[in-house]
Image (cartoon, rainbow, N blue to C red; front, side, top):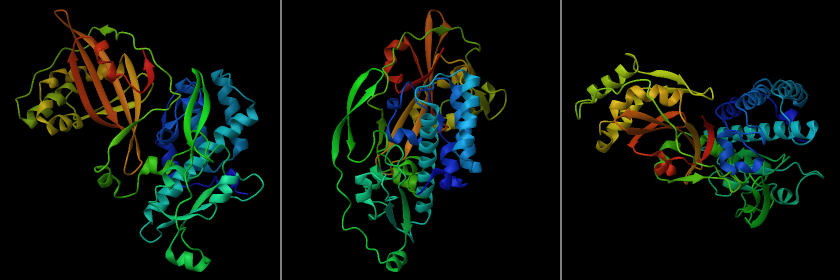
Amino acid sequence: MATVSALSLPMREASDYFARKVRLPTRAYTDIADGQHAAAFVVAGAARDSLLSSLQAAIQKAIDQGTGLDEFRRDFRQIVTAEGWSYNGGEGWRTRTIFETNLRSAYSAGKWAQAMATKATRPWLRYTAVMDEATRPEHRAWHGTILRWDDPWWRTHMPPCGWGCRCTIQSLSDRDLKRFGWRPSEQAPPIVWEDRTIRTPDGDVTVKVPQGIDYGFAHNPGAGAFGHGAETAAMERHGAWEPLMAPGAPEVAKPDIPVDPPRAGLGPRATPGDADDLRAVLRAALGGEDQAILTDPVGDQVLIGQAIVDHMLEQSRRQDGREAFFPLLPELIEDPAEIWMGFAQNSVTGRVALRRRYIKAVDIGRGMRLGLVADQDDGWWSGLTTFRGRLSGQDALRSGYLVYRR
């Protein structure tokens, strides 16, 4: 039997996958689904960042050091006691679910990354089930399926395919197939989508899920995190980015954004079309430095640097004088009114990108208010938007998952 303890050996790719996850508070496991799990670390019902941070560190230790379930349970007890967290279910069931689900997904992502690194010489992937009395009938039927790495079937059927699923994959070369006497499958097993009712804190919701796969598992963890290897960036230019939102995600009220007095005054404008002058304006706003690392209210660090200028220079319409607001960037990150998190998936590679959006309103005098919106995609600065007027008229910008509200 492929136990988690047997899998818990250090794997760099699995460690990288888990370490890059961003903590997201949730009410229930239905708050996010499928590919969103490739970018976010969640524990159902864990809403405090300090609690999530401690649980994430305990799982990271297990991946990096190969510690097992017993060690995680000791860590879990200490964390729960320190945080005063009241959770649903018994300790044995809850700790096993958290531990095994996260480790199996991390090792799945690691195996995918390794397979993508060798796909030129080992283009085949074989679905492998444990084949004992606990194996699901559908997973038993999929056992031995051999398909190319780029077959669409792997987008939804990359193990684990459900709670407690112990299936995995093998990457194979043509020589391997000949040695084992295996042949590639003539076609992928059929994907039959069925309606399933899930219970959310807001009531029951009907979702479509492939037969044999539990809700939230119909995705490829490795593709969501790493794409298809070295050519991912080039491939993604040919695919649209499609927003991801779980059917059971919470509805969030959007009250008026409070208007703050600015901590800094507005800065100068750059000479139109002068990139060096634009960079100098940002440098002055950052205290003479090319970049600054700021910490937001939930403890995440944000790098502000010349990428802002690069973004503005990409299109002439962005060179509209918004550099005058550069001095307000530190307070936008350090004291925003709201922080939102959103997910998008590339239609070609399946990689999931994470957008973090900071929102703030400031009074700039003479009865005028200024809205500031800063975006980061996958940890890289991607945009600064400013507008005058009430932020309530810009509710489309307040989308995704609310992770902070002052």
